[in-house]
Length: 84
Image (cartoon, rainbow, N blue to C red; front, side, top):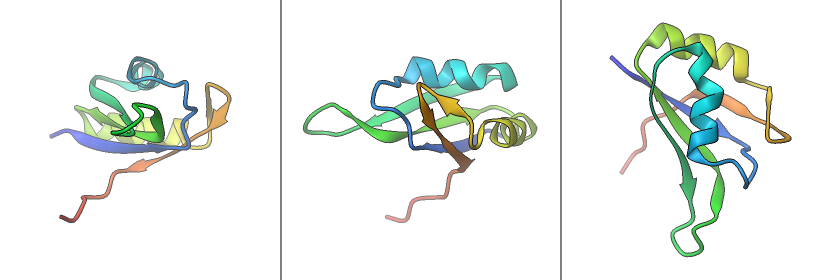
């Protein structure tokens, strides 16, 4: 079962490929997506990473939470289900 990870406080220059590359050393990244504003197309400063293994996801969270990507200290944790 895959695990969805929330990544916050991203630099506006960080793209989905860069986000995937940051998580790749910790295991198989199924998907990585930086969320963009619908109107402007500019990054909203957060994204999601889906990893295939729960164990790999926990390791990535432990290692990357508080680390720096593109000059910004990021916040990384398990994504919460969105209520609709």
